[in-house]
Image (cartoon, rainbow, N blue to C red):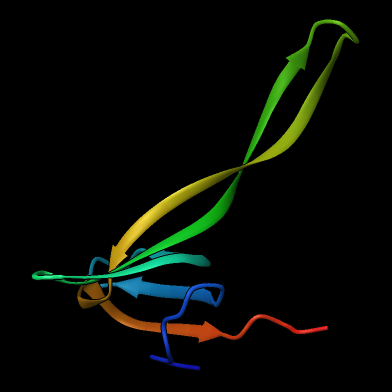
Length: 83
């Protein structure tokens, strides 16, 4: 939902005023004098050499980013799927 509710557990994507886009799963929402700070968890691709087996291992590591909603032009949220 465009400019939808910002709640922990929801999927989140936004475009900031500088044109950059960010997305992930909301893990924290906090209110500060500057505005609403949303912390999202996303995954970065990484790889390392496994010296024991002699091969390269590709993994995804969790990373976090905090974004003020007031710095966003628009954002979308989506409720997590319930099975």
